Image 1 (cartoon, rainbow, N blue to C red):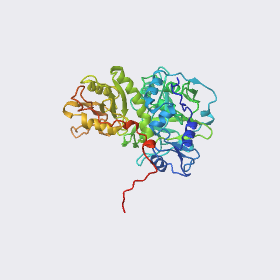
Image 2: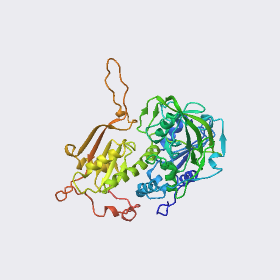
Image 3: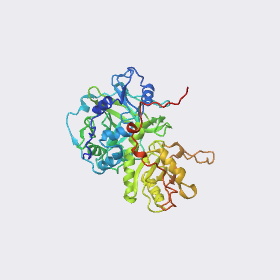
Image 4: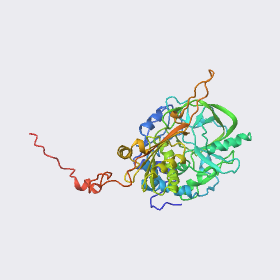
Length: 477
């Protein structure tokens, strides 16, 4: 499924990096940058301005890249659409997935390591100050449903703590459901961790879909052609054939090892806990591979999570509320928790219904602000202006207590009082939800709620209307 615009779709990892370099959006770091903290510090410093390529990190032969999807405009450009068409293009692909095609002799298996040593082969960085070691942060984890055989793709944080063992965070979503089914059978769940894929496949991995919808088929729809995949060497999982690196392994049943702390997307650390474990069976990669790392809680991390969610939320809201025009998960709300909704309000009370629908659409959302069509939901200053001038807390506020929220939001931790000297365990993910109706009344007197504008302000042309070579004479002598 090609998009209707004539702009090219970037479907190749290395060509996209070359394009960024050719357009002045990729910086090359010096050789010898330390994998512990220094690499992440440099990438974070350039976050949202330039991607960074690290040709020879200290002690490594494999180069590292970070930040190649750290601007909303870059992601739209990679998709071949204007920024205003980003959500619609992603939504069309998600609604019309394209089956992948299997190929032989793929680039991702040009080099095979049957006795894997993850840290010895790959330059896995340690990112944040209190992280408990090196983490794979941009790995697409692919697994098959033990019942149906349909694949799921997700990005999970993975701590590398041995040559061939890694601890992984599983949230209660599709991969977790696959694992629990395998564990109930006392079976390992075969997985592949894929590192270094093109922008469209990376974005597709974050689609919000029902279970048993393979995100690699959404990647194909974004590509406009079936995605080439290949079977792993040690299991039945299919992976993108042109990926840079594939780690093949098994999620072991009834095995847990300590993982964390780790700096997560809310810009706080998750605690050290017993997590599920991947036993690594093989590593395959291209000749001269490139390793991709995502700096946690920075723009690449936040945008990869927020844009697919926005597309899904917009689709869900518009099914019941056709007057919804646009949505935005704000970066200040870590691309997950704060949702801005633009709508054409026809009746009083409509915005409150939209607020309730948004809370039901995804449990991560804890604050919804509904605004009118004259407010740009991608401009937080405009949204704040709408709240300041169109919202009154005694009539426009919706609060829901005790709802399910994000377990990674530290404010959702519920501490219960001790009984008989015994402190019960903390409960995470219990959240209050807040909605703000920041829309003007349907009917109002004269120009009370008319937004001030100056005629012609949208057509000012500095090249025509300002004299760049002229100087004003203030007669200072």
